[in-house]
Length: 117
Image (cartoon, rainbow, N blue to C red; front, side):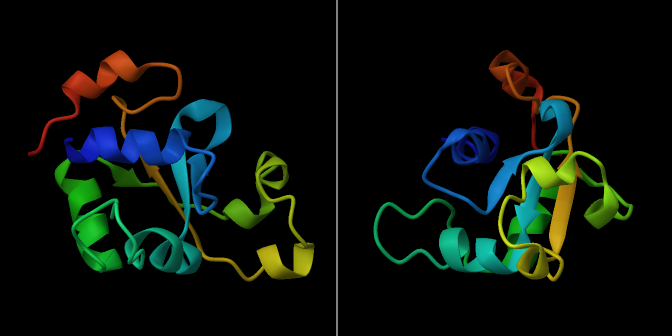
């Protein structure tokens, strides 16, 4: 599978709790530290991605046209619905948000346009 298709399966899966759709399904949210353990550090087959490095994973996102979204997402009105865990814990999480116009929840046909640059 291509990187975008693997990423789509990951975000859609109930198995992984460290990556999910952002507000209205227009972006993906990654809990960086936990993602490194749950996804990139996965030792049992099947491994999701070839890399164990967050830097390499982010490079792949960028190569496929994803851009990092800036802002104070801890205060965002929609964030609590995704962070049902203890507030003290979630306040210390480093969340990364990435956007790609061809990577949207409920629009898998757009993946065809997710090409490597």
